[in-house]
Amino acid sequence: MDQKIHIFEELDPLVFCETWGLTYEEASKYLKIKARTMAAYACHGKVTRRNPSSRVKALAAMQHNIWIQQGKQPVDSRQLLIIA
Image 1: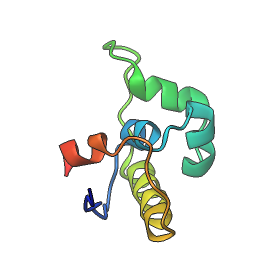
Image 2: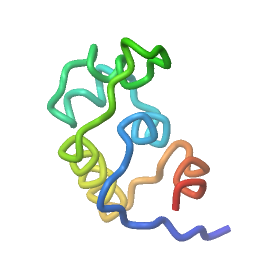
Image 3: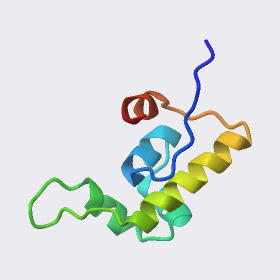
């Protein structure tokens, strides 16, 4: 089963975490943000919810694209098929 993986210009950091099986701490190192900020993206409250900036989304997409080009396989590619 050969699925085509799409190349992204922007990718939500939470989808990036789920797709590659990363913890918030691991993903925060690649995205150059704090793990606490990653956790805030996941909050669903009105006060604490934060939206990722386009810079963070671009970094997530860049890292994703690099790993795909290197031949690495995502842990959960279903997330990518949903948003593509």
